[in-house]
Length: 427
Image 1 (tube, rainbow, N blue to C red):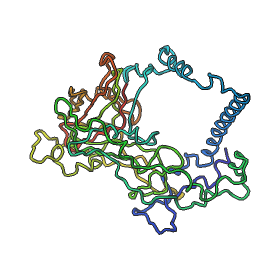
Image 2 (cartoon, one colour):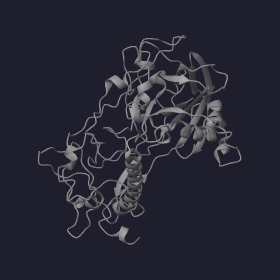
Image 3 (cartoon, rainbow, N blue to C red):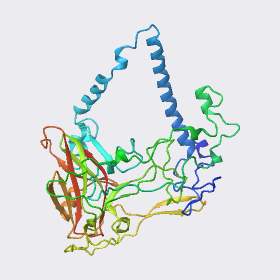
Image 4 (cartoon, rainbow, N blue to C red):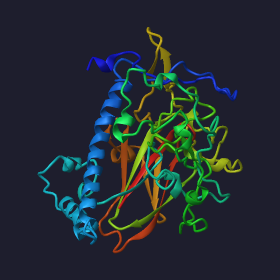
């Protein structure tokens, strides 16, 4: 326990001068935010990581032994080692038939459909880290506006290739080289090891091409042009160690490499409809995870707009003059020991909605309108920063799997109320 508290507890820096002369465009913090006394530092993370790694390596060694013993006489391994369908089906069936008295899942009743406890769900999200980065992105299912616009992360990296070398990561002369112990080799990696690791491409426009480019919903719901991606970092932030993440030109800590962000697609009344295609819906369940706490200045795309899609010839009646009074934000400040601390300065509460506020959602063209009171009643606060809205819970919605188009929009609040959609769940 005490060894994990030895200094330096943190090695990460925000910037190290590079040999190629590239300089950050933004003023850099001294060290990444979060290097505070209640965060454990790299030694504890390394210890836990190695314990997990050794367990996996032992399992892998066991598998190799089974393989060697099974093929030694010539015939292939027994069928039980090749075919795992029955094994997985056994697990699925146990979940589907779970006794309601077991565990705590059914305590969600009243907040979420209890069918979630035994129904396999599909999902898309803008949160990071996420696996299969492009395929699981929420904006991959967004239907384009008539001019082809789809919300997209347009952040650019400051540089490509390796980071500048951080000497804090070097092994001290008297330390044990774990790589050598595990591999039984003298030197597995050299200083250029990370240059040889396979890189992943950030841009995959073919994967991000939304479904049903030209088909519109039956009642003429048109995708809006005012939605945008908020707080998703630059790069391929999928949680793996050898990808580049958050080297954005506008970042104040380029070497942070932090993957954990609450990305969302955000918009206001003037953003219009956000239309998405959910593939293979079978069970009649659709749940939105919302951010109702965004501020007006965070909707940069609609800045200066006075109507939906900035169609200035249209005059909207009853436009609300209610303003978001909060000026709260994340602020990085220096604490007494010279390190940086991230202070939680913003509110995650739903702001005061104007009386004229309406939230509309459509499922295959059928529109449902919730006024302020109805919306606040239907929206569920599952826990801090987790707000959900169930827009479909009907086991008889369809007799077979089909693609379903959903859409949402805000009304009666102008630019003053900004919502985000971070996740869509369906089955």
